[in-house]
Length: 266
Image (cartoon, rainbow, N blue to C red):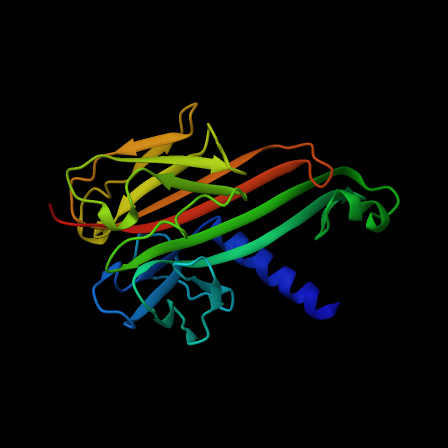
């Protein structure tokens, strides 16, 4: 029980740090032509896009293979400013690198004028709330940070929407994004297009620009968001969605994703 509580608290602390920092996962290569190649994956929680600030734990980092199977990434290192992993890819196809918090529940309440919390859902909270607890609220929380890497020919298995939480899809394969060509994304919540997802689009190099060049967006009624990248390079989409849910397990839902991708020269 103690180990589980420590893990939950660690996960909560990481999420709290993200309120001030954006967590991103960036592979050294997005497109490769040689099977069995190694890539390096950098991860950090930072205020500036792709400028590392805080190293994070990578114990939950996973590699999704082109056939959809999953394997953990074990060659990891956590530094002060950033963390790194060495990942060997196999044969041809598109891989997904993902660092995700598991679905979890956070219950807050007031007792004797103080705000307190429990890591339990609505069904579990009844037995654990102290007598006199007021203003009780349970929030369902989940976050994902991911990128795709393609070896030779692109495939679609790991790119498809899984129908769990906040996800994004695009008509353009991640390996085919080109500067000057429109990119259209659809944000989905539990497999359905979701309006009102708010996010920020940014791209590499803002440390060397007077204007960061960030774009705030909110998805339309069909869950869509589109833009035309003017520059080749690496981009970051960070997005979140929060709403009342009134389910058997939670009163509210909060979902977030960060997605890094590469835009090629025309």
